[in-house]
Length: 320
Image (cartoon, helix red, strand yellow):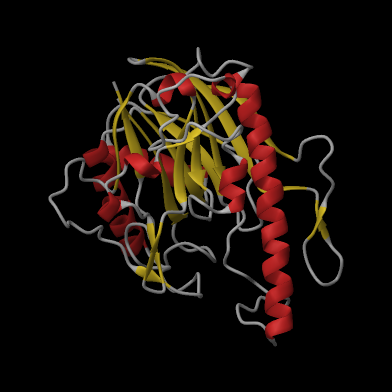
């Protein structure tokens, strides 16, 4: 079974302030997205940037076949939210934006506004797949793309840029902490016996401090000598599957010409030992040197409003 995550990039119906301007551009986007879903044929796929529930319905109708879907009821200010699509029925376990107890609100701007919860809700579901019961949490953490008062994407000076970079980092770190708390609930004290995955656009790379928050106890990472040696941390640990992805495909977005892996699949102890492969993109077996067909994005999030497909590649694993 294939399990994955994919940022669908502003999936809205046409005519609104964020979606494609006309029906033709919308249908082109749906066709491009559907082709990838069809090629992947996922059992379970976490999705981000669903702007309208009806647009996700349109996408699944374009793909065809029987699908089950669940969406968070906590979108951000633009209406985008996370969700899950699955070939098997879904039970929603949690849909929350709350920070865990003990974590205070964090500063969000120069005016002193604070963020008291995640900008986009975290969704947790359970399903019974052909590979067995599976619990999944899906998230979309605070972006590294900075915005400034007055809907500006460029700062007045370097001081403002640095401050708003710090505010974004505060929020992403707090959200990662909240997501880790949700993962703890799903693991329920023993990842050795439960198939649990955390999926999503974490908006930072593997070694970033915010991503590392999600891993739990240190040690036994993939690719280390300790991986095959059981230890007490296995019950609570999550493993980022990035080391299993071929090195020349280990990216999910291109930002100003730079390749980065900001979309992640993290798995519990029981699940990580049942993975047979991992990858990015829609081709499960690309030839040597095959590159992902991704645009290079810049600072203007509206620049791709009428472009088909997504500016992210899916990240996936196969479960044996």
